Image (spheres, rainbow, N blue to C red):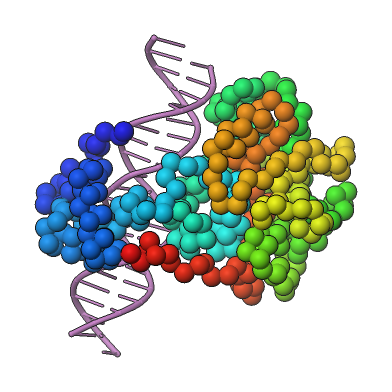
Length: 328
DNA sequence: AAAAGATGCAACCGCTCCCCG
DNA sequence: CCGGGGAGCGGTTGCATCTTT
């Protein structure tokens, strides 16, 4: 796989401590230690001379790579993405806390996912018209601010009608999609208003005070971002639509043309990664108008992010207790 | 086919928290 | 109550791989 890195590993002033990529033999030693002592006493690994690694490094390796219940090599599913987005809005950058809600994901995974998403967002906010080349992945040049205005006319009306047409608003299913003055209470709590269903919980009480409407750009502090429109309708929950497996598919509506849903993407299994679904979904949305969560312009998600709500306790239940694996 | 740019991810660092003596 | 050590967390870095031109 990856070669050992020269720049950072190899140690320096403390040659006794090894840094950088882990060798399979080191993993074996670490695994053995965990089997015997459990996932603790990390510092004793070095003090006993088992490995020339710091306790922190050992713990990190175990948590991020060696834990038996990890989903390794799998991208975040659409539902996992939503969980992260919802919980980030609620908890902030408490990655470890968020990760406890996602089985098989580590705080590092969540952190990396979010960081990637933020970078994408930052790029897209500088580039007013995200474009997707037919048959290709999201064009990296499409995100280039220096070329954004030179891009050709949209070829896919479904995708290109979504952003940057009107001032940003969000709508719920069950709300009037033609109304431009929506209730911020419900608008800003789309995520939590729907998500708890995945846990079988009643929706949280409404927040005590009206909340401001979220605008793209606020997150990045970018005042130069072009006005954007993306009406994301959670397709389920409030309106009584079926929400299979705790997932409400996304529906995109052209606010100017029709309140009718343009496309409904079937949800994936909750917390179950299915590469076939992922790839099929990707292939689909390039040829048709289907849109998968992963491929949405990130600013679309940001409409749903919550402002600080000090007086409103988190509606999420505490995560399930650590599994046997975690205790070992 | 090659170069350039974008993306994903593993791992380190510094700080904070918590427990124990 | 206080200090020290270990553990945990969030931020950041840098390389490998992938995608686009």
